[in-house]
Amino acid sequence: MRALEPWVLAPLQTFLAESSARLILLMTASGQVVAQHGFARSFEVMTAAALGSAIVASTEELARIMGASRFGAVVHGGSRQSCMLSAFGTPRGRWIGLVVYGPETSVGLVQLFFDQMVEELVNAAPREPQAPPLLAENFERELNASLKELFGR
Amino acid sequence: MSPANAALERVTQVPGVRGSLLISGTDGLVVAERLMDGIDGRAIAALAANLIKRLGRATVGAGMRVPTFVHLRGNAGSVLAAPGQNDLVLVAVVGLDANLGLARLEMLDAVGRLT
Image (cartoon, rainbow over all chains, first blue to last red):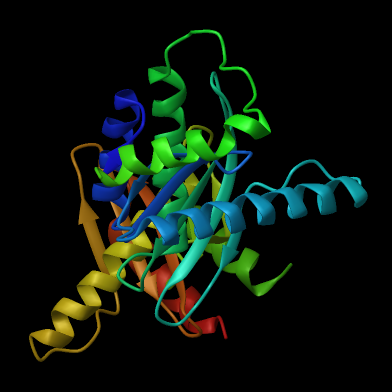
């Protein structure tokens, strides 16, 4: 398990232990990776983060068009593994969690412990001013630095 | 009244029953519920479904049949569960003073009527 900020690790570890999820990726709403567990290659993380944040943006826009409030979570159910995407507010801004789980657990358990993890993250987050938005000219450097931190190379 | 709500009403009328739920066994999600305030139906659904699934695997692995009724006893009460057809599980949360025999009978009869 790797995280850019150490206070994220404990809630994430508890979630993984309780929910029996296989993979998790925490990212900001813009797709910047905050923490990951289970991904073997940085390419997979980059792809999953980009797709995950795009899906959440699409569903939130869909909700807006339908006049509904935001959707709580998007779940793709599969026979061998399933995937849940859920956005949530933190003192560090809006984050997205992407969870992959198998038949050894259930969507109910994953959602239950995910919500508990969100509560723990919100309580554990340092109350510091939010980082300024990432500028395009810094994006690649920041991305590479994040991936290096997350994969230890 | 829908069959699901009729089943829940029968179970909650038993003395000592604090609430009942109909849950999806595979997903661990609430299908219908009738609970007293302060009982987290979502948590019960997720955890009870997982328990039933694991117990089912354990009993099948031990060469027995899947349980038809599960009684999980705690210090302050019990959780009762009766798996039914179509992946549905009828769950009841009962206090220490509950009439467990009657609750069991009502649950097995109610879950048998659900199709």
